[in-house]
Every structure is written in structure tokens, then in C-alpha cells.
Amino acid sequence: MSYPLTQMGGSAFNHNQSSNAEAEYDRLRGLARQEHDKRARLSEQAHQAYEHGDGGAAHQFSEEAKRHGQTADNYNKQASDYIFRENNAPGRVAADTIDLHGQFANEAEDIVEQRIRYAQSQGQTHLHVIVGKGIHSVNHVQKIKPRVEQVCQELGLNYSTEENAGRMYINLQGGPAHAPPTQHGGGGYGGQPHHGGGQHHGGQQQGGYPGGPQQGHGGQQNQNDNEELEKLAMKFLPKIIRKLEGCCVVM
Image (cartoon, rainbow, N blue to C red; front, side, top):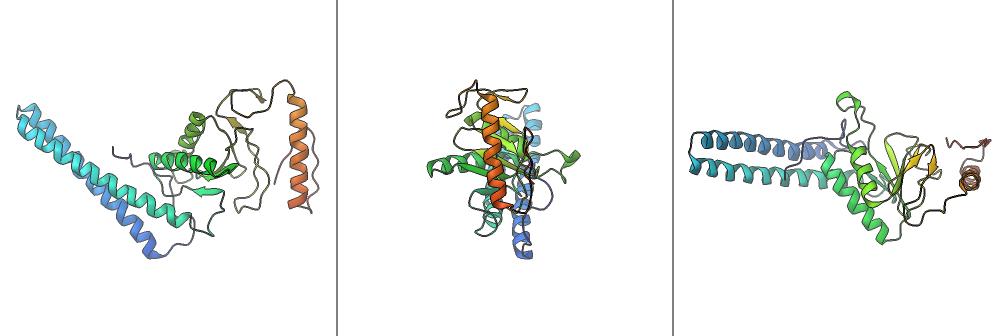
């Protein structure tokens, strides 16, 4: 199955890449596009042959189209693997973070699901996912984020958009998705939590995700969460005096 050519937008790299690295990525995507074009032309020829009653030619064109489609998928897979290695090399992102720059939507969906399952098998508690803000996409629409949200919902995991709107926080243990303040380069982590395994009504957390807190103590739970966040903020940002008034904002 060929991937739709829907990319995050903007640069495929999260760092100052070498010209050779960029050229290799562009080469692979370019070869994939060429194969897609051939597939489209052959599919049209197959349709025309069928319309003219030439079943043999239609079958031949159709088989050739399938081969070019498979070749396109192979080139896209190589490009996806290449850019993922480049953007997620040691030292470029934290161990609890993956960067999806340069991925097509379907590729990003597969990568996130695999990474979540691996992280859970290793006892990892959370995952930060760089999904991009959609600044360079058509109509500034985020392409990757909805796919990541869909994966979280299917797996029953809670997630939130971080203060940097191009990043997401996923709780891998089934609890609320309140990202703690960290020293990541992406800035502070606030945002609105979302619940993959339950429902969201007026800010109240509803049950339905494994390992979640018992309901009926929403006010006390929120207070405890605020206190924990305040302690963490004072630990990492000792020069900032924070006042909590029913909610907390992590800069």
C-alpha cells in the first residue's frame, strides 16, 4: 500500500544537517515520487485498456502499476528510516523523546505505535513526541498530531499538548497526562490533557483508562497535582516565584 505524500511540513531535519544528508533524503523521496507517477500512468492505461475490452493488456498494465507502487513504498521506507535515524541520533533528542520531522502521516503513525509498545516493555513511564506545529503545512494544518492522537486513543493512553504546541506528552502508564517541568529544549510543558481511554467533560477526568485514579475526589486530586507540580518547578526553576490559585502554569 502506497503512502499518501503528506509530510509534517518545513524542513525534514531538526538540526543543521550536512548537505549530503539532506541530498540523500531528498533523493529517496524523489525516487518514490517518480515511482508513484509511473504507477498512476500505468493504472490509467490499465483502465483505458479495460474500457476498450482488452483484458490482457489491462492486466499487464495493472501488474506493472503494482510493481511501481511497491518500489515507491520501498523508497519511502528507506527515506523514513534514514530521517528517523538522523533526527533521533544520540544527543539530538532526549531518551524519552522521538522526533517525527520528515515523516509522512502513515509513517509517523506506525513509528509512534512501535515506539510506545517498546517503551512500555522497557518500563518507560512517558514519551514526548515532536509532531510539528504545521507552520509550513497547507493552511497551517498539523498533519502528524491527529495521527498520534488516534494511536493514543486506540491504545487507551492519555496525552496532552505541551506548551510548545509542536510537542505532545503521552503517559504510558494509563494515568493523567500531566507533563512535569523538564530541561528539554522544547520549553515548558503545560497544555490541555486528553484522555484516550475515557471521556472529557468540563475538565473532569472520567474513568476508563487502566491504572487511573478513582473518581469522586476530583478537587483533592487536582490540589495534589498542583502541589507536586509546584515542588518540581521550585526544584528546576528556583529563581521563579510561582503562585498557585487553583491551577499551575509551568513556564
